[in-house]
Length: 176
Image 1 (tube, helix red, strand yellow):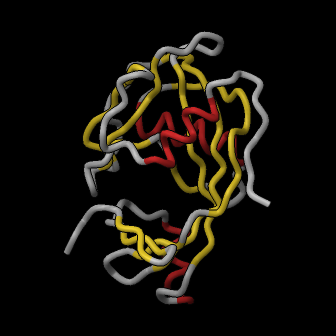
Image 2 (spheres, rainbow, N blue to C red):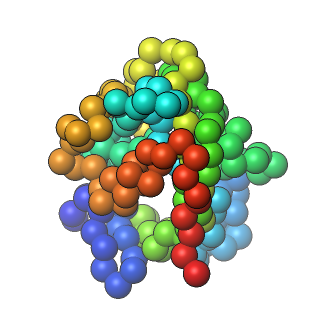
């Protein structure tokens, strides 16, 4: 089986990463049916006003570099959820600057047949403290990348989010 992200008719096959308990509990009731989940994603720059690097993580399931992201827990607000996710995954504390994008991603299908669709909230943030390192089992590497030397395996969507996040006060992006 091809373990990389493959887009086919607006569906994506993905590998498994740790799943929150509330999602496992829901799966007991709905099986593999499509589950709409609130997701958060970060574009974390080294500096708020004059960024030169962006924080990236290399996924443990498909080895692609990506912007740190995660699933909101029940009762969480998006921005604090993202601050938590970035700290849990990378060891870096951040401050949120603004909302960059709000959009629904294509349905993804996991090897076990589970289907999920994320309502993705992408935020721009900047470094506060901490040393970037692998802090959980979702990543095999974490590093700061120069904005003009991003890894080849970074997805076009993540590259788009970095570009949209560059202005400190830019408007949020959404599709109508």
